[in-house]
Image 1 (tube, rainbow, N blue to C red):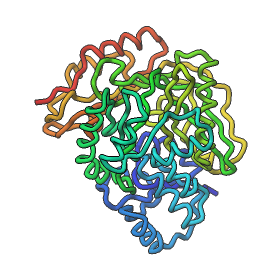
Image 2: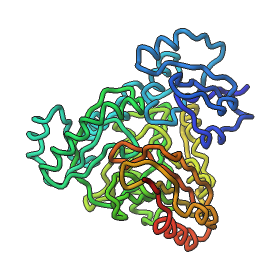
Image 3: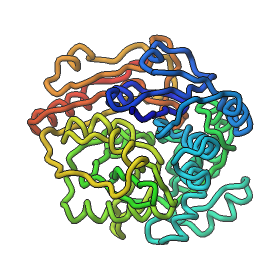
Length: 413
């Protein structure tokens, strides 16, 4: 008999296409506020729910009568992690707890949990209640500092501040924008702002999974990240994600050990973990943990080593004693995001024809349409274009990466 997997809130084709339909029934607990999509026909059943707040979600769940058991809940997007936990509790489905979901959805609560578990894995931080609390708490910090929303993803509204006056100015700017950005991305929580100690070092991510008993495993290969600032772009987004890592196995193990500590600090169970870290001169420090598979990771791991992260997430809910088989890398993989350098109207992607002819190009997604308002991640916008490169020849992949960096641009007016 097939087991049933339910996608919570919002779906994504590169995830659902990897689910073995001979083994699993697939249903969609669709957010009723999202647009109708032709993708709905891939599901055995679509149920619309009201995700506006906890009360409305509870009420809409109580109004449906399921004549079958849901075995696995999946949240592909960050803003549906807490709803996933609520649904799990109401319907009696194995999932992360509501408390763990809150910790994973709020960077202030997350950092408090890290400090209680092991202070060495997290930078100094404080929550900003108002302008006066900002000024008071900054006295204990050296510059630069990072100021960011507590519950947004994709580097939205994150700013690096080099001095006191800049920090106060950026706080005022973010305060004006934060409510509308939270509403736009349906975060299910109230807006909050935190300030963190600036971390110097290289950025990496680790993919973890915890089973229903809280046992944690990590994929043995770390993903290397290049930030916009690493390539002299004044913005907060991740420009490139690459696998396999260029780090030594020992350094990768240091990152993995810290990532597992973070998973345990949040008490994540029956859940994936997308752990972002900086490798600093004082060891690994966790930037944040998302209780989901990281962006692009399904395709990156699948194309590089054949690792099925979707099946790993399913197994983390259904099984104990998870493990990854021997990992052998066959391809080098990079995922690249493109943003404009200012708020403007999108026109086109420069050199897209040559981009389409690159040897390493695996997939290309352009999200912006002509005339759309686009901008920097630090101003609350998401990427205009995503590019996935795959090649068994590392040198060719690096040449194609260089072409994109030098010649492929977002053109606006």
